[in-house]
Image (cartoon, rainbow, N blue to C red; front, side):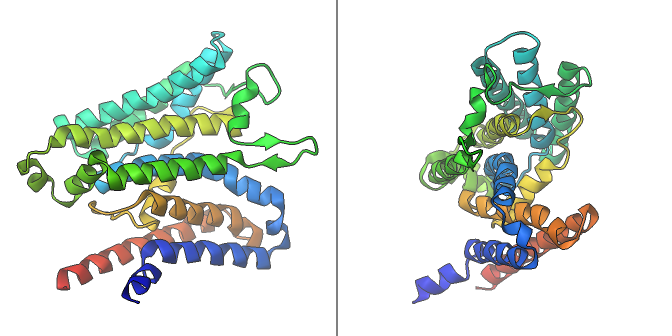
Length: 325
């Protein structure tokens, strides 16, 4: 009975209930929200945010942050699209470069934070500006369109959604998200990399004194974040027709916000990948559903901010309760 009680009071379970309640509320408040096209819109928007959130979960658990993933996503996508559309590279090669650029920036972030000992906020803010500038250089200030579905090279778009003969879209990307989340949850909970990531966030000095190569595993947390920013760039390129330079700022806040809502501790040392997935859907439902009840962009930001404050307060209360006991 005690075990059931702990499950029912866990933050992941509570956030899952919030997702269900939000979906039910918007469905009742606006019949048009219940349309299949709206659900597809939510899923399309969620893919790249989920991927960023899964990746940034690792730096957050170490007690750090990665602010470069939002503008990085756009920068990597513009670079890959430039090579495909302007230089004639095969789509597969452009996709590989897009992902590798994320890994390179993630590695740079890890080196700056773990070896150079720069504050994560400052280090990733610098690379955020670098990726934004690189994206503008590749695009020369203009939007870049990856090959369209049905066009030569447009096969990659079917990775995330398939359109049937009756123009019905099948959200294949949602299945990929579940597989990726399950894989990374295993990495976090059942591998040395995951255990040391949590240990660094809990007590970095104690982890170092126990013989762990803290610098390596700390760097790897940012490499994972960069890798998933690159994968998110692939998802973004597959879902949207055109990638515009100078955008992406704010994507990282949605990804980080989703992770924190899902139970990642704001001070590090605790969190889960599956929690980040659920938390992202709170963000996605709010952003998609609020316009259906007449609340526009400014109110969306206020409501999302209040939800984040609530999630941080829950984290603080949990820590205080743990200290008392």
